[in-house]
Image 1 (cartoon, rainbow, N blue to C red):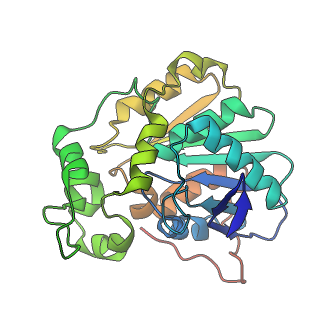
Image 2: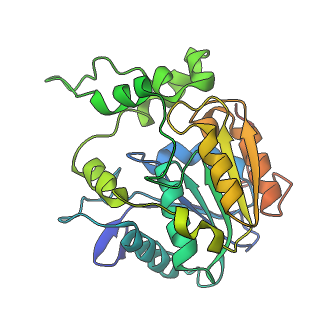
Length: 276
């Protein structure tokens, strides 16, 4: 737990040990930092920092709603508190991808490289499949805490539909978001769009997309790729959670983009296991 901007924030960090540029990761909506542990392990020598947004995972909920610019400011101060005072790389996943765009705009000298995974330009996005969105937004826990009707495979698509083992492996971290923290995350992005200022982002940018993503269709990634001047696009043959279901493939692409093509060794001296 780290104190920043008058809040207590739960942080997860993994040290690669080579003193290189750290990678700050913004998670998806409602997702705790544990969801990205397979990815940070697979990134090997790259120093990574992930934190639970206020109201999610182990970070206490705020009293009042917030906006993306406030979260970007908090993330910048958090990195200072952790001792990272120079340039950093930033990766944003889904909802966190919008926050990553805001961070890159707000702190252009701080953000060295930008990675946008399964994300969009905000309110100007091409919407996903109604069936997936309805399942994601319409599920309510029963009196016993169960989630009747929740079908993660239908919501996220891709390999989760064909491999029950993957679904069981990640089931504890991919339930439908709910509660005050989730509501505040929705309010943070309400009315927000990056479309007018995407051409002004100068950072080298990697856009990652799932070819069969039912939540954020791949056309949104093509839009980001077209409007960001120094961007490259890589489409992975999977659904919305390709960072989990195609971890080894995605991590290899990210390492190459960040200038570290070798997996190296994770903290503790153990080579990261290849996952799919």
